[in-house]
Length: 143
Image (cartoon, rainbow, N blue to C red):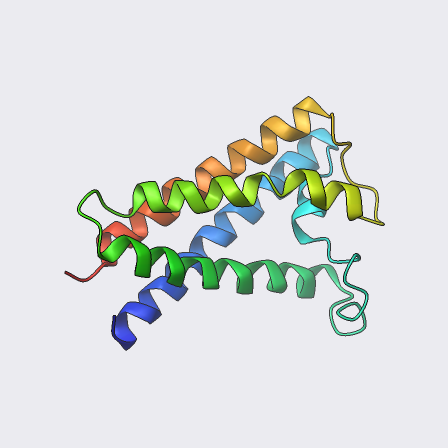
């Protein structure tokens, strides 16, 4: 993997993270279910709060994580004959299951662990994330 590949992974992660964030923000605005709040919430990491207290800065943390995921997915997907989409789905599925521990450790009000509507929206958003990330990586990966 070269510098251009890393850049492609960063951009794929950034764009996919924006899509996920906008999807969950839209869900939260339309339904009142706080899935976007869960996505951007970092109150369980008190050492980050002084520097990342605004909603935008917390979204930036989400995007940074997504950029790292983009590079990892590109790196893992490059060597596989079956492509990047299964890699993106695997990583996104792992991230989607973070719904449960993140809900439990959150200080801010987030959806309950057994809120099935929130779980459906959260997992749907992560499927969307996987599709976008996988497609972008598939287009950009190097042989």
